[in-house]
Image 1 (cartoon, rainbow, N blue to C red):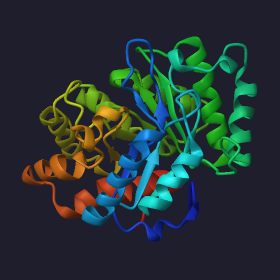
Image 2: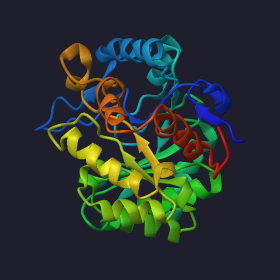
Image 3: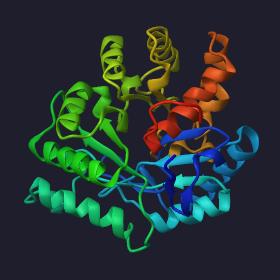
Length: 312
């Protein structure tokens, strides 16, 4: 079985005995003139570390997939410090977010040049640290169809993922456009089981969720706790519909903490909202412990390693 690339080295899936958060941010900067809270900088990292360490002690948190990529304020060195101090493994990422956050390098570059940029980071390490990413993501688009620059970055991400043998996770803005993303990525040669379509818990469309899962992609319910976008009650209803349709092996769960006001010490829901609030509601709705383990550990490991079956 393939190992997982983390910021502190290769990790055997067999050492991941507890749950995995598959879409989080530990260090990022998405601030714009109208949104000054979308940052997790050095002054927040002690609180981030403390939260992860507490979740490791309380719930056995084993791994966090950190999806901050190029143009999002990624800080690989900070991720390594947070990982070592919290004793929670962390996967770092490369790629490009959706168009408003593209770096200038995207504007004039073709797909081949963009692919080479990603392969250079995959092979040589992130941010001059030598740390290799374990994921390409969160590669973004907004709207029902990608813009022209987003199409190029998605195609480059698919090619780099195929060549490097990495999984790929998308940002489907407000859950929209996931089927088009999947068609574009698989059309570029990336197998569906290496793809996770993001933010589907923001899209109140069970038919789309079923189509994504039936095609073999992972379906991310990854903004759990963000009640300003969608209630957890509706998320749970959508999740149960997908499980009842027979697609439990294609679901990934996370909270997407992406601003400092979401941290617990600032009164937010924190990284542990999935474990403290959502999963108890899911259990009350009939999801048993084995299924919880599938959703929070076995599925993430299959996605990260490319396994298509068997026990993890």
